[in-house]
Image (cartoon, rainbow, N blue to C red; front, side, top):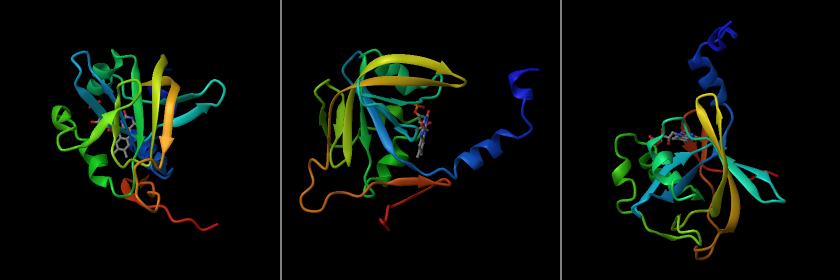
Length: 174
Ligand SMILES: Cc1cc2nc3c(=O)[nH]c(=O)nc-3n(C[C@H](O)[C@H](O)[C@H](O)COP(=O)(O)O)c2cc1C
């Protein structure tokens, strides 16, 4: 039995059901070998371990953005706010990788990766290991520095959420 024969559902059904799991939205960013910034929208970010401090995310096999930034050995995860939905779509658009950072304000993290202005939080990592899992890599990062709510005047920002293909905000109820 081949891997594609051992289940009875279509890929579209898998995608649809997984879309019922709400996620936060991040832009994972890093520098290429020539010192140019690269980044993509990533929902598969997760905290992995507290001691040592490890996080991870899953880029698709063959991702241009991941292959450009992986050479630097580091990356920064930027958690988007509900005021940054434009960045979510901009950094998910394929064929426009080179212009994703146009008109985007950022500064370097301690490891040199982009920290986006007005993100809810940023997590700066060194690549610990890259595992291949199905049609994605799992990139495990060791956290070197991180901060939240850093550059906001007044009220802290609210996070952006992704659910069933649409973006929305968070409202606390308990
Ligand atoms: C909300 C959201 C979450 C996403 N999460 C992921 C993800 O976890 N992994 C992934 O490979 N692509 C994810 N994508 C799609 C990528 O952002 C998109 O395919 C992008 O073009 C990848 O850049 P690349 O073509 O340079 O690799 C997500 C897109 C959106 C809108």
